[in-house]
Length: 115
Image (cartoon, rainbow, N blue to C red):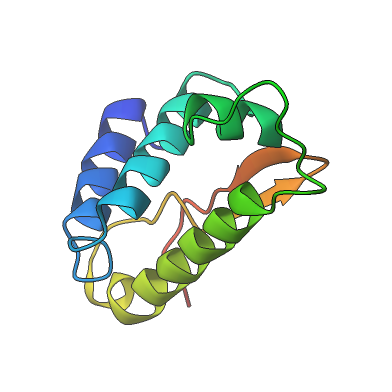
């Protein structure tokens, strides 16, 4: 299993990759979610909406899909990174998928090289 420092180093490479370098919002969202994950937190959709997107307490995820849309966008960027970059690196990839499950953001971790 990778230690937190190694995970952060890999995160930096992801954030500096062509898929992320020109997308400040995606960089910040991924950083926010990884920080939460490393702190053993799984933020709820409403928490992400309020803490990250600046929504107020009246935020209703049924009416406003902002978080789901942005998480989906982030997931696609991670998938693209995974498919185009990681196969050329000799390091494990700790962040494979980001998804909302039961209104919580969760990462599926993979600590081995893809086949």
